[in-house]
Image (cartoon, rainbow over all chains, first blue to last red; front, top):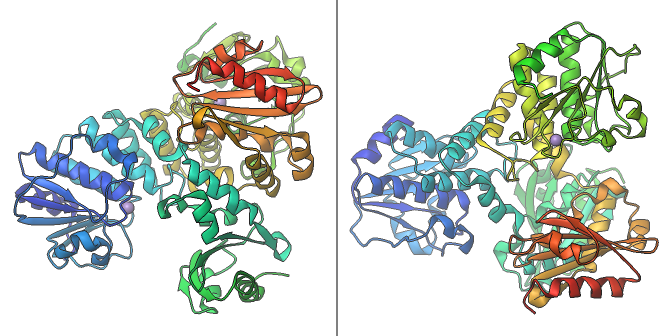
Length: 315
Length: 315
Ligand SMILES: [Mn+2]
Ligand SMILES: [Mn+2]
């Protein structure tokens, strides 16, 4: 059942012994929003804890300081920024079917909780959470402001994506006014690259090839690159967006080596429907970002992608 | 003489036949703020034109559409985002000593105009201009909102730098509400890289070397790289910030090849005073960013930088 921000606030005020579930492979929004809610509920004298299937990445430690999960039998389960129960992950899978409330902003939300507060006009769950707190009259401390600012800035690529609205900036302004360390948070989230990420970028860029008179750019993330760079999966975030960002490129292709072939990620400009292209190779996705799998070696994978793109791009 | 936003608004209301001077090598803030002012003055029925020593980069064309400089004898000269008359450049140098008003946000402003409206608490001149317009009761059209948003987003690295305050986000929110195409502007300014910029990054990253157990990262922009990539000077913007952005790096060094040696740019973390290091080699600058010149070949330039850094970094 879909409920309003007001009703959500009332439910949270009544809730006792709350377990807050973040999604697996946690990002800044699911953690920022979850911990903001944790601290707000604790300030109301409630017992609460955050659960997540995966460990918390070290870069979020500035708002995790002193966090110790409390042991208690849960009486209210709220999932935060979790579009689908499948995203609970193995460590919190036992909460599937038990969520009393889901607070989210994903258009793809599968409506798995007893009640749902969903607003996909919000750039981040943290942006929605701000209005829930306002409805609750909950004090937004500097720590809570840091949590919410983290959610907003990470889900918007530092206010760069098209999901940003006037309201997003308005909430950011309020949070900075309430003590969010915006400059420092952005530095941690966006300024620093690990040495292995730098190594990956360098090797991947060496594989860059242009086709179709520069309208297509292709890169390859080989297993060898991963081994040599020492990069982990989460350090690859954003790499597949790189080829599309080159001037004049309408189709950006990233080929990631797997056991028996290549996982393909395709990003396109608005002239080309990425899902249509990938459908030709048994894949699918969205209009601007889609994927497929091509078995065989690198050259045949490249040839198959070129062939699929040929009908969409001038030679 | 320093004057308030209110007095600035009154002067602009009284001004006739206005020449607006932007700084040479124009950026998004000087052009965005200048054209916002141009359109606001024209809406009041005044004659006005923007002058700049260098041509307007193509990426700003969305707010330059239909602009034709008007020919008239100037009766009021206002410089916008220009910290020093030296920055007028050769094409507008004849306005030196003639500025009636300077609107700026640079702490280094040299107070060269008859009147000065300076606020270095603003992240961009565009942010200051918004308040001047409000004081004038000038209508902020969608075109003017695009101009001002461009100034703010470019001078803050898309709301990432520490010059961003709550007010910066507040003004951004208002401008989006007034029709600024934030997503599209950010895409043009930050998402797209030219093919020659991509080529430069790839070649420069191949030159990357770590020293002092990874606490120093050095890159080199050789003349050969510039020739092979075909990149122009303004496409090098931000390259020298790259080495410092690597995790654990306290000193990021960029060596740019010149006729008889290397121009060195040093960026540091807060533990190291970049100006102090560069002073050892006859250079200078700020605590986090400084520079010097080292004559000789690449290896001797690297050796000299390592020696200068040795007293500041653990081996
Ligand atoms: Mn989210
Ligand atoms: Mn400026």
